[in-house]
Image (tube, rainbow, N blue to C red; front, side):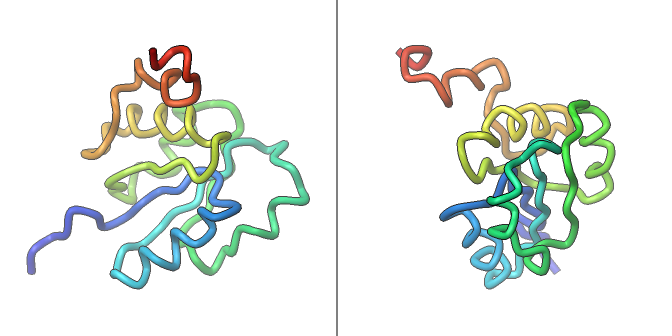
Length: 118
């Protein structure tokens, strides 16, 4: 059986409209992992994250390498930021794990700052 390009997707801060990503990926046979970008992530937003949509959930506690190590065994294909708060961590984790689908980490700031894009 041929391996699909996207086997496992990691979503960082899968809230708001991005809460619909994991169920959509699952409909195509793609598993999802959730990464919460911070222990201090607002409590009022956490109910938007449905643990049943994910094969694993990890909370980032400030150490990118530690978080990457907690995900290393999964063979993640891509990290997607769910909302703006997940952009930087998604980029850093993709780089740390050298996932096949990733943007250059040195351009991370440009993905959040329009002046940097210019």
